Amino acid sequence: MTLLLDQPTDPHPHPHPTDWELSVHLPSDAHAPRLCRRAVVNAVHEYGLPHLTHDGALVASELMTNAVQHGRGPLSFRVAWYSVRHRLRITVWDTGHGRAPDRPTPPAPDQESGRGLVIVAALAVEWAQYAMPGGGKALWAELGQQPCACSTPSSS
Image (cartoon, rainbow, N blue to C red):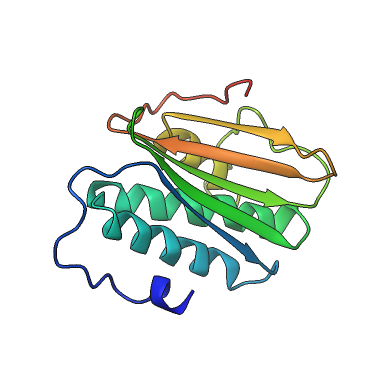
């Protein structure tokens, strides 16, 4: 994990990345969103996908923050690149019960929270959630070349 959190050192990033994934298990605490965000930033830079840095970091942070606030720990996340589809998928698992809203609505302007899944839906090409067989849930979002601001969860 230490090398992953350092700035990328490869002066020649991979020009055409093949499929890859990175999975991390974290405690459910205030550090989890930051660690998740850093891991995504470093992974996309190392694999030559710097154009996905900002949106990937933001989606990862919002999904992990949602899991910390509304789920239960421990938490896991995975960031994966699917080269055939040109998609970056970020998945976050928690052991809590319940579901996230299928169509998140923006909160009132004076509310301090509640924007996370609205942001994810705006940036993701596709996103969804599913129940885990042993309990808990997973939320995932895919980023591609052309995000669609009108995306809604798929039935995956």
